[in-house]
Structures are given as structure tokens and as C-alpha cells.
Amino acid sequence: MWLAGDRLWVGHGLTNSWSGGVVGLDLSATTPDPVRIASGLYGPRKIAAGGSTVVAGENGSSPGDL
Image (cartoon, rainbow, N blue to C red):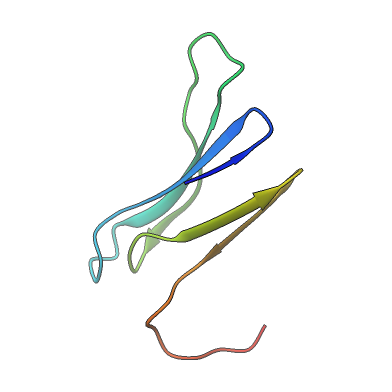
């Protein structure tokens, strides 16, 4: 989970299941609706956010280049 301004970003899912994803919630809204920005991922994501940028990563998988 990561809080950036009024938006809470959450990585969710089960490890090794391809059910992982990332959703955002606007906490300034009276009734926040989840906004899905990623789905069908290998597992729950590590999240970092700042301003209008969200980064989602995973540890324990094959190395890759950025």
C-alpha cells in the first residue's frame, strides 16, 4: 500500500497465481470507487507512488532491465 496525496494505491493478489493487480482509491471522494490500473499479474505488487506517478514491482522473479 502507498498513499500519494488523496490517492491510496494497493497491490493485491496471491503469489504465483496470476491474480495480482494494482488498484487506486481516491480518498477525497465520498464513496471511493476502485480504479484498476493493472490485473492478471503473477502476484501482489510492491507499490511506490508520488504525484501522478505509480511504480509497481515484484521481487523474487527473473531479473530484467529497466
